[in-house]
Amino acid sequence: MTLSGELSRTNHQVEQRPLFFNYHEYTETYYADIGDVIEYQGHDADHELCITHFPNIYVPLDSEKFRTTRIVRIPRSFESSLEYPQFSAFLPGSESAAVTYGADGLDFVQHGYFDDQNQIFGYSSVSPLSDYLTEEEFNRIIIDINTIIRESFQVSSAYNISDLILELLTLTMWKWISKYVYPHPLLKVEEYIERVNESRAFKEKNIKMISLRESGFLSLDFEIPKPVIH
Amino acid sequence: MNTGRDSLISSSHRSPLDNLAIRGANDGLASTISSGSIIVNTPWYKKLYYWLIVFDGDNDIIDGKTYNYLPSITNYVYFIGGRVKFLYKPNDKLNLLYPSLVLFILVSPMVLFSIFEANTLWNTKFGYKGFVFFFYYFWCMSLSFFVRAMTSDPGILPKNIHIPKLANNFQLPQEYYNLIRLPIKDESQYVEITYCRTCRIWRPPRSSHCSICDCCVMSLDHHCLWLNNCVGKRNYRYFLIFLTSTIMTVIFLLINTGIHIGKNRHEKKPASNIPVTILLTVYGSLSISYPIILLAYHLVLTGTNQTTREFLKYVYEIRDQHRKSKNPVFMKIIKNKNNIYDKHNAFKNILSLFCQSRGISLQPARKTVKNQKYASHNIDDGLQMVNPQNNELRYTNLKYDNLQ
Image 1 (cartoon, chains in turn brown, yellow):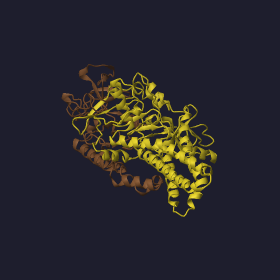
Image 2: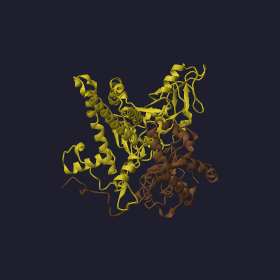
Image 3: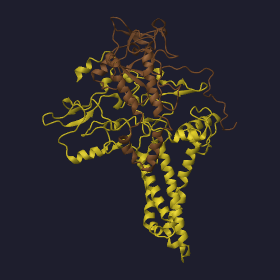
Image 4: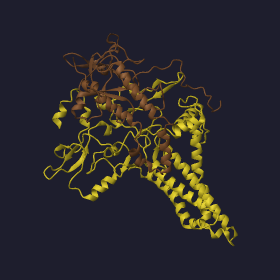
């Protein structure tokens, strides 16, 4: 057996293509049912609570915003490209391998309390974001963001090549003046997100997108008001 | 302070908010000041010193920027108001030896050359001025890119972004310990991603956690001891230009010393006339070996679209499978059949890694931090800021051993 590439080992070729899902979510069986008395207890596998929203880590822990908002995370999708960040265009709950609970369909239905401050969750992957955005609106935003990111990360783009050449010629002095001469094209995403946050639709519903620079392009975060009992 | 927090504790277990008590709150009254500025009653030299160097987070001077908090969550130290960063671990001062050695190796031939050779070579009638000029030009390039590769951001990812819950001291659910497989464009392959438990983020593909820098880095190639910095996505081109310019410097050094030796051959005792020239020739020939081997290694490695880390991981896998104790340093570079990043074209592979788009800094050091709080000692004699506090999880060190 030679040590070249012809090894028989488990490789990345599978018979069945893996399905995409929101890897930020997880399930819990120890939670409290919705009711007058909040009592934490174990539940069976058929009634697992699906955790679809998370603490708001972008604000201080003792602030009003921390108590009243939650974050819904849109994961990164690798089906269009591995070279640059792209986000999943599926509203959480409608991915191929999302957790479903028959009767709830594509709505966020409240089923239990979990975590500090008794946050409200449902049984399926559908997040509270579905209460604020339709599939089409969400899709439009994601596609716009993905397009801007794709254009900024091209290796052969004029910005990248000229940046490299200028750094070489000016012996690294270009770095200190480049942001005053021409800002990085990726900052257009920041402008887009701000524009969407200022739009009437978002302001009325009191939701906003977290700047991608703050979240490190790791996930697209939506800040939503904390779900309350209705 | 405390009254506000009690109402947040609604479950029976300990709230993580208790663990992140505001530092210095015991000392006195806390007062909130809206974004960051500066203190009265501090002497100017102290102000200058703290602006120049930030070792840990606690300073008397805070100008409301992230570099005041970053030293407490990473192993970096910031200079000149956060514009220049450097890796520094107080327990491991030996790390400073390597870059200073490289600096010595870079500077000493230039000094010797300037003193002994430059004059002779410049004043010839055969137009060797060009070679002297190019030697100095490439030397300047080598030094500036050395500094740049050492102080530049390799592509650090921010910490504590993907925190799943607060309960039980930010305990991680079982699902976050799994290796997740997701589909990619090529239907016969998949990509694997994992959750970094130290940085509390879902790591993008090709990123890796560097334990020396104590952070996750995008497209991490390796941690370079000589540069005292990781070489990653945003840094790779500077690393390569540094290697190339060093090689060019040495080549021109050899050309120049060769010319000098040639001119000197008609003397009575040729060798003893020009000891420094011979020393520089020997020095040049020896010191070209390491950079040129490294550059060739990276050229071949990027031709197969593998970073050093990915290649070594593959090599260790093979070695474990075959139970051979081959040293990975001497292994031939082989293509990984399952490399999902491979474009099957050496030139395209090289271009995609050498010129990978730098993107923007994701852990910026000079970003203004909102919502700062300060605790003052004596509120009577004017505001004197001590111990900046920022209760954001992103600037807090959630140690792994806190987990249950």
